[in-house]
Length: 298
Ligand SMILES: NC(=O)c1ccc[n+]([C@@H]2O[C@H](COP(=O)([O-])OP(=O)(O)OC[C@H]3O[C@@H](n4cnc5c(N)ncnc54)[C@H](OP(=O)(O)O)[C@@H]3O)[C@@H](O)[C@H]2O)c1
Image 1 (cartoon, helix red, strand yellow):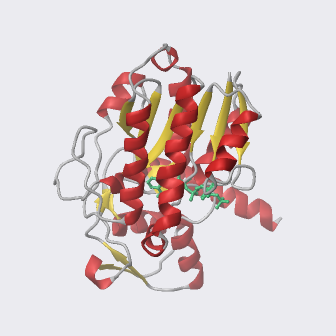
Image 2 (tube, rainbow, N blue to C red):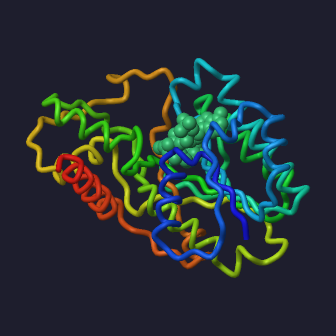
Image 3 (cartoon, rainbow, N blue to C red):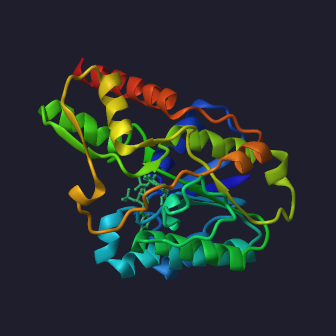
């Protein structure tokens, strides 16, 4: 079984790569970075697949900068929609299974209860709209053998994310002003990577002609960004000052949904996944980060 993981330098791509190294997984993996597979070039995508005979694609690559997407709609649409459509066409015509990662930002955040997979998507931002267009392209091309996993507030030991940003600001000694009126659930990329590896081992996933489906995955529990920052500060042992502000006090180019809690019942039931609470996973990630910092200082 040969599996392609796109976005190999991103948070999720790196987390999957790290787990594949640690665990004894019988599948063979090809991890493609943007240099090897540039999703802005549709011909390049077509050519890339001529060199391999993949059984599965895990598409972790995406245009993920929510604010930049408002100013660069064309590029965001190419990566999050047109490239995804091309990948789905290639998967469909070569009998390749597809796991594609999408986002809670497909919702407008007005529901007031956790979103189910069947709820109507109504994105507020270019990022959300292009990701939804990618989802729709997959579902119209692949009636079978595709899984779309919507996730939220992803962080990890790698790259730019909320945890690393807060830790950097704490080190600088800044007071922090963090919004407290956007609710959701953080997702530790390592947990999502583990969930994906469990799914690809499952009997359900390996059946022929499995209906294509959308699933939601984040850690368990709920919080706002201020709660998230507070927990990072607590775990780090810092005594920095944290203030709660409203979305209006922190204007951003892209509009963010106010409440994107997602129900994880479907994914946990159908694939027997045990989902960790966000605070427990945050602690694990931060322990790994501090071990990495200490060993870098040695
Ligand atoms: N981060 C979040 O908070 C969040 C929330 C909800 C959903 N998601 C979704 O979860 C998935 C994984 O996110 P992540 O946090 O791992 O994102 P990430 O760290 O930003 O990684 C995205 C990856 O996509 C690659 N990429 C961007 N443009 C590309 C292009 N034109 N061609 C090829 N590769 C390209 C990037 O390559 P470079 O490394 O070369 O830049 C990067 O490795 C994405 O589908 C994202 O939409 C993320």
